[in-house]
Image (cartoon, rainbow, N blue to C red; front, side, top):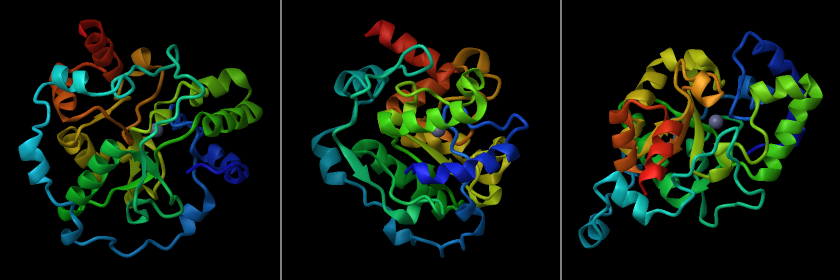
Amino acid sequence: MEHYTRFASRAAAWALSAAGIALAACGGTSAAPEVRVATPTSAPATATATPAKSSAVAQTTPPPQSCAAFAQSADPFTLRVVDKQRALPSDYRPTDLQAIDDRWAAPGFPGESMRAAAAGAMVEMLAAAQAQGVELRIRSSFRSYAEQQRTFQFWIDQLGEAQARRESAPPGNSEHQLGTTADVISRSVGWELIIPFGETAEGKWLAAHSTEFGFAISYPPDGEAVTGYIYEPWHVRFIGKPCATEWRASGLVLVKFLERLAATR
Ligand SMILES: [Zn+2]
């Protein structure tokens, strides 16, 4: 959850990230001091906390097997393109936001929520990672239009509008407003949203396995010309397992995959 009161401390964090490790589409969520000093919580969950398979439900309602079928069953926002040119309505707020247990939150960043399907998939993914000895936690997830507005205005005040637009998503233009997107990060980089996360064991696990749980990494390496954002190895968006599988096979940047999908619907 974003808190405006944290912003003053982010100015200092900005200085640390000034070498191009900007926190682009994530809206300038630089480090708050409490993250650095927080005592890591003990291992939050045991393997027994892994969500049970909903076999009874699965037997009666088979999930869509193809992305096209999933797209038919999903609401329009689940696969909607959101980028610097295509904004969400200012009053869009998912109606099925679900709180995620703080055991999955990065230290200092409790109280996160995502849309129900995304939240379930996220917890399943983090539990699977943990079972393999990989500790991943949520740093930021759903952000309302108003929260993004405050975040963006802060960066305008700090940097001027031109630079702010290079580093932070304007309100309405952030995938975080969808409620299906989260920043997932690790202790090994001090819970910071920094590009070297992609080279950690945790970042590599996320890149390798997130599609198995229905997530796509929106902003890949060398994708800035297409996405307008730097590489964000921590920023994942839930698009459902069938679409995530097909997205990976396509080799396309997510926004291009979603554009192509929309054109065929
Ligand atoms: Zn993000």
